Image 1 (cartoon, rainbow over the protein chains, first blue to last red):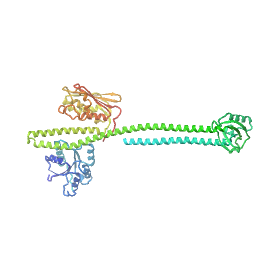
Image 2 (image 1 turned 60 degrees about the horizontal axis):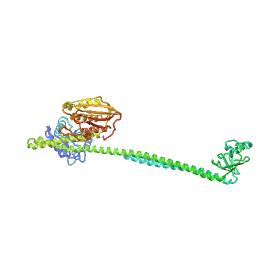
Image 3 (image 1 turned 60 degrees about the vertical axis):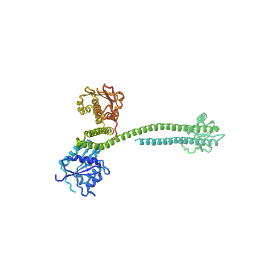
Image 4 (image 1 turned 90 degrees about the vertical axis):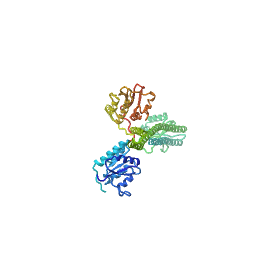
Length: 145
Length: 431
């Protein structure tokens, strides 16, 4: 692959961001990761609203559900209602294992739902699998904006 | 539900009060009205008799006595006259004056007729048609002095009876209303209590759910960084540091289990029951299969006797049996554990038993062990968080049953619980 794959991580907790980055360190895929600390920021980046006019359109979105201001569910809803952005696969990555959350997310059009395991090694394995699956196995759409 | 029930009871009570009051008022008015009417009639009569004082003249109509009477028939006239003479009640007497004007149509019972004076020639009664039999005039002596007394007696009797009637209706109605509303209020209070209880249970479950989710997040980070530290720096720090790190991860492991169990417990209480007809024989086969690894490790066996088919939530019932059997296998003695699952019918419920040959429980702990996170042994001796029996109790209680244990230390324990045979468990709970 010539250009690195773009991943947008929507996650408010810095520790979680760091842990996700650490988990990605062992990934074979070259990934460039942008971090949005809340839903509002994430939507602005994706829509390239100021100050994110030059933000790249990500190949994959890792979305936490419990975010300040605009929640992950709302981000998901907005994304899947957008004719262009809805093509970007969204992986919901959250601590919640509640059936209602899972149902709601798939209702809103999430591409997959993953409950973050407490164990870091498991988490690392999952991130690796997500990476490999979405960024090497799956054929992603070519999105022109 | 509670507030609306209370409001409804109060509204209903107010309505019933008003209705009773209106009814009683109506009774008094109607009774009083009819009394007043009869008093008015009597007043007419009194007027008439006053006008005829001394030599009261009353006209008895043959027609009014329902006997066509010819004035020529003197013998018959004499018979009628003697009838009126002997009759104290002049119910069919019309009182006319000399000009034939009608004063009153009847005399009240007990009107004092003293004697017949004369029977006169036919007179023209007002409104009489030519085809009507002729009407004669019977002159009777009436003792008008008794009239007032009779009237007064009538008034007293009428008002007295009506008043008594109204009072009886009012009082008995009020008593009925009081009893009914007391019943409704008690029901409303009970509903309110039940609502309070279920609300506080719900809040507790929500709290447990939220707490465990929110506790999980920082725990994940602690675990994550501790594991990163262990992975990247193992052997690079000194042995003490490695020991500290492993203690951190050990504790976070344990805490994670506690939180998981708390979540499971709160879900057992908050998820909606889905009661369906469940063959417990099939259910127990699945449970036994799930416990296969533990069974092999313990070198034990499970004996399942014939079990009934009943209505219940299969997932929760499976968890109930699984927790009890798993406990029975865990708290074993040196000898291979044998767990016996049986059921017997008692009235309209089934009493289930899960009996083991394990270490048993002291009597004083028989109630304690069903409490959340209550443990009788160290986690090193028997691993676990102490949630299994709390969940078992929750499942049984949500199915409307009871759970208890009978045991002696060293002689095994038998856990009993009841499930309704005919009544499906109550629906409800948070979805």
